[in-house]
Length: 167
Image 1 (tube, rainbow, N blue to C red):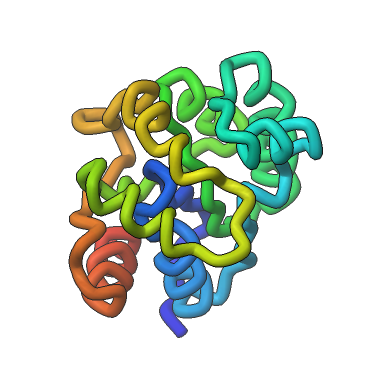
Image 2 (cartoon, rainbow, N blue to C red; image 1 turned 90 degrees about the vertical axis):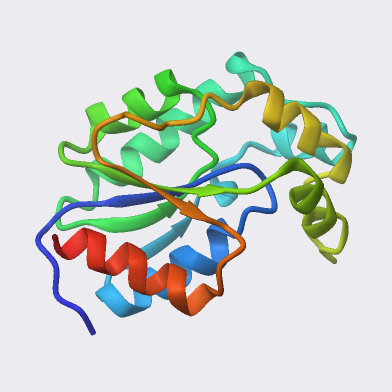
């Protein structure tokens, strides 16, 4: 297990980018609590997404507030999965957790759509991938962000993120 300074990490990106897999690997290696952001969506949000309806800012407001509570409740740090599609969403999360870092999994639309369509039991409809890309404000140039290629093998991504967190 790699020991790191206190602080949290959000593994972010569109649906199908590999957030859950990378976050689990990094959390295990870091010895940190792993929180799956999707678990904090309201039942109404889940139904909406399952029906292929994209979420809007109002839909996401309560979800983001819940994630901020989780970040504040783990001052020693955690690893959180969250799409964090807009800069203002990321800024809201940053306010809840000073020093928060983001690992952005960059992926193209076709591959994200392919991955989402092969999921078995996830509530997210594959038809929503397009809306995620329309909403996405890439975090390039923002402080505390590492952009990684979602197509790399998981072991490489884990090492890249953990090396960055140690630096």
